[in-house]
Image 1 (cartoon, rainbow, N blue to C red):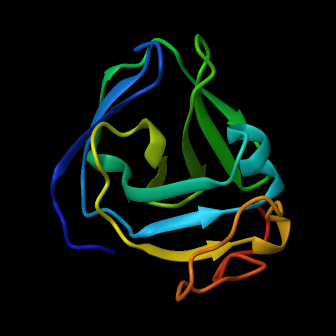
Image 2 (cartoon, one colour; image 1 turned 45 degrees about the vertical axis):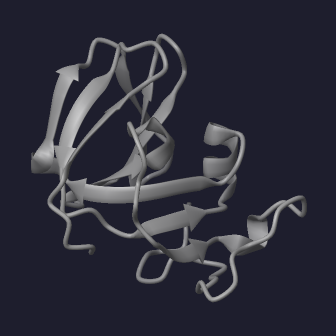
Image 3 (tube, one colour; image 1 turned 90 degrees about the vertical axis):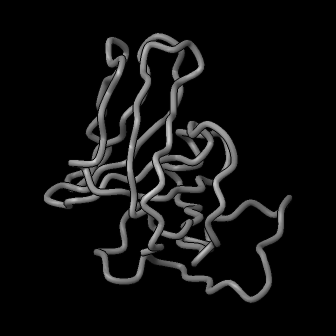
Length: 140
């Protein structure tokens, strides 16, 4: 985890979901699994923070989709923005960095499920690449 305790704000496109979250924020993970690609239209760049550090200032549009036996995805039902990923029993919530306001000054720590990557883009050099998620059950 990065040590920053900085407050971040975020929102969906239409404003039906807005939130504040305080770190520490995990370094970025780029996920290339089929589910992330379908949910976002590309791979997902995500950080994470402890669930108890989230405060929703607006959540009328927030809905959760149970995307697998072990995880759910948070999105806005009004505009369709993909916002979060939450593993069952985990104390952290992944945040899709595109929904955060301003710059996200965190390094990329790894690419996961990289064998699912589409050929039109390249991965950064000197960043670990895995065809699974280290420490998990290898599902997206």
